[in-house]
Image (cartoon, rainbow, N blue to C red; front, side):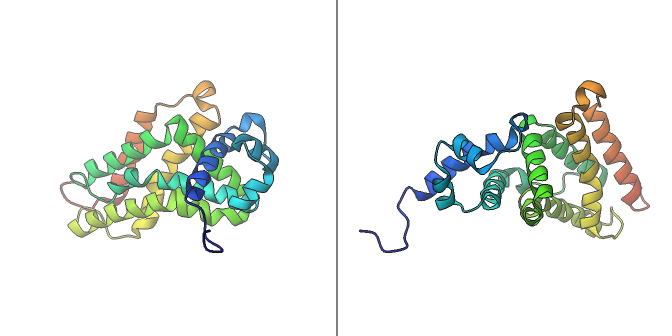
Length: 210
């Protein structure tokens, strides 16, 4: 017998399996707002099983967001490291963000996180801590390096990182989740270059780059 309060060896594997099944249903907004019962059906289990593993609906969504974040660690890992001089590094960071956010799967996950967290305020900090702030903080570290090199003017680099990523995120949602690619298409590459060039023009120090 296992000690009271301990979990069996397959507990975490079962959790992960249920989360993966529910993620697709949460992202499928064609089926409408998924209730707890509908999430259980998507996971192939009972509502009581979901409650046993996760708790209430908000806790389930929070667990889904944490699982998504665990899969983005490698993608974020290289973000703090500058790539070339200031203009080149900003352009590369913008390209990374554009490539990720315009990916149909990633844009769908982002939209799901936004919808859920805007609908349940308690989930807001979870969304920020799992899907947005880790990238913003990593990008701010990259910008700190350029400030230290004298290539970028001294500023609040976290605010600057938000200024760089925000238009790219809006453009991706505009095209992918709001249907803009059909009714008002945008050249993602040209937009990426526009954002990067505007950022460099605003933040570069006076000198070879400025």
